[in-house]
Image (cartoon, rainbow over all chains, first blue to last red; front, side, top):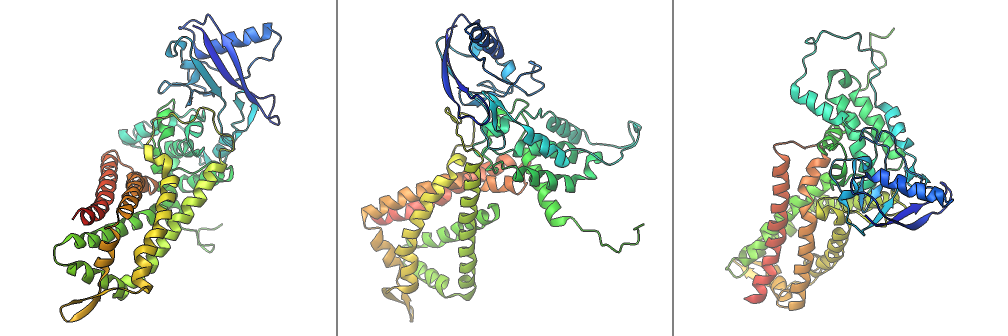
Length: 258
Length: 207
């Protein structure tokens, strides 16, 4: 396959950046998208040029590192996959492919196609964990959990934090990511203990970092490599509303104080 | 945003219900009595201020949220947004702005006239009523106004297509059984409300 690639090149976070066009030929339709990028980079190194910097790690759709916005889609045109799982047979011979980094104010470009996704870590640090002591491994049947809830929680926990939802959203909103993290805990008894504080802290952090708002457009759900449903966003909204409206403040003079 | 939007949908329902009375073949009697009730009843008059509040809240919140959303992506993509999405949801600010612009014209045409202007009068039973119906009919004998209103209402329909179900989702009311129904209600509201309002100028113009 012969292809024309238009790739965003940016020296560092401070520089301006621009699109550079590369011609690449003899690419096997069976090679993966990242292998095609490797071949391009090898040719650039041989020519003495700076190779295109891009994030990648597991190359099997688990880590969520390979953040590339390809022809108007995060992770390319296929559904429910990451860029590393995308194959060149998905493209036509002679096609022009535009490759851009994730675009969002909280995800600044570090170099070429690499963005800084520390913002997601900050949201997790704000409350995406269970800090109560849940004790040792309980007997299998001592905490009954409905199958539906266990399944929904597992579905939410499938989020790999790649940021495709932010990249796809016209508002650069992180609602799907935060909703998945809130939901995986809110659905299970161990996570419910801190559910109210968690959702408030994580939403506050998300807003503080400058992500956009959710307008229920659904692009996040359509582009998520793990097919996280926007029903999680509704669950987060529910959790947030009930936490804001319903949570009681403990009175300072309660008898239980030490 | 969602609550103000839902309130405005309920207002559109009442507005449409009263407007459709003008099509009743009774010499505008029912419509004029209903219009008179709306401008004189104290409960309706106090609700009018709540309605203004609803409009202002919906418009201001919409503008603030949109500005935040634009700021969240300072550098746009070269190849933008081919994701499968709810189509009209991408243009709520644009359809909203068009609706707002024509809303001002609409208020000048009818609301301010009825409130502060000179109104033709008509005798119904033993009382004199403002002939609101005549005002409407005279306006819609003009083809330009009819086209303008149809255009405006088309955009109201586009805006409403992403209204009800989106409000439900924002309020956290998502359910595997009922969410598809909410989508249906949204589409139905868009067609019934925009279509219902469109019938009025068309019928008046062609009769």
